[in-house]
Length: 174
Image (cartoon, rainbow, N blue to C red; front, side, top):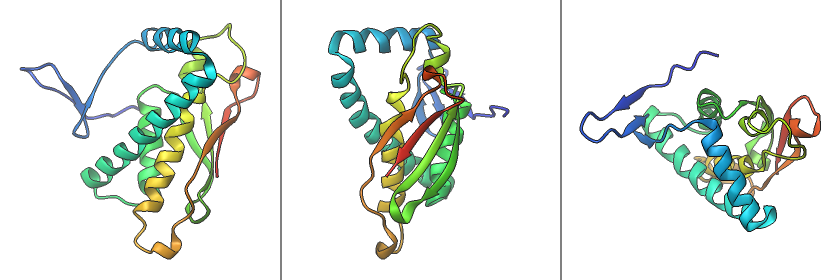
């Protein structure tokens, strides 16, 4: 996969944008070190809950903006979201299966940034992604033109992680 992201840098402010959204560009270790510090300070369960809500809201917002920017809709937006996450170094995201009418999806993540940045840590390391997939799926359903085709509200959970020795991380959206 060749990352061909449209990155623009404002010469006056230094703000980076991709697809009309302001971006931050930081080294993976910097982000992961901050992530781990907050997890340790708050406890994993509390932090995971906060990340889920924030990630859900952010994914929903992102899908809305990208749909408008690119003139796409439905699962094409969800697929575009995973492509952009992959191009930005979070991991390589693929849809193993999806059915928006039932709010169901199974997402695989290979080369997760959380696993790569913490090679000596074991367990489910990628829980931060869970809210992202639920937010994107709910956006798909909320914007479906036929309200009868809309699925129920979704939730997402990491069911396996490369950090546990699996070939990939797997998230179930239901």
